[in-house]
Length: 255
Image (cartoon, rainbow, N blue to C red; front, top):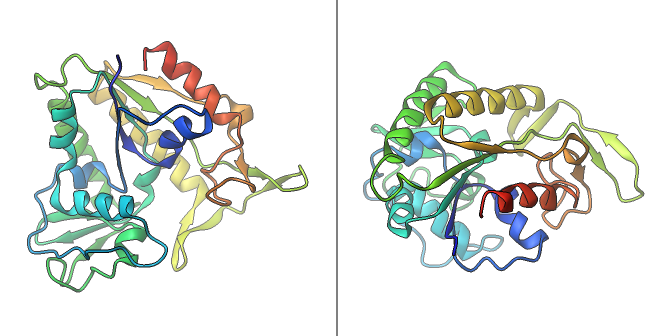
């Protein structure tokens, strides 16, 4: 029986929900980045006992894992038959606190941990900067080495490659173009075209470092966002046909 681990975002996890497949036996790590995964842990951070309104306990666990750097050990111990990466959460800037790299996710921001214990004055590393590029290039090499360790050497490694959609299906069934100027969240602007170029670049670096990896990608006709998506309108919340299209490819690899 397959044991599937995901290092990625809701676009991969939602395949199971959209295709009505139980998530039993799926280990999921999100709101992280390759440079953060391989970094030393943040020392002294204090997680709240309960999440604030608007966040669930899953978000609390994912932020804690990103700060404490527990995801890779947890995945190796799980001994997955399949490990699926997607890089949609690689849109966030990075933070450097004394050499510990953290993903500056919306959830981290919402938990109000920045400026507190463990993260008193982190330095922002812009996602599109040369520094972030160097950190990511180094990190993918460390991930490649990790994937060759005994517990993972026979794992089927899969990259779920996608792009931010350039258009979306509105409630009336019309197709509307996104503006190129977008926001990661309010106050954090982003360029759709720049982030799509970055995703293609990350794909290429990943495949060069991990040649055994296999790629799944939805057909072009499904690379469209959906205004009626359960998580709201976003360039990576896709039309319903997206998810079974990718699931068909994953299941063909034994997932």
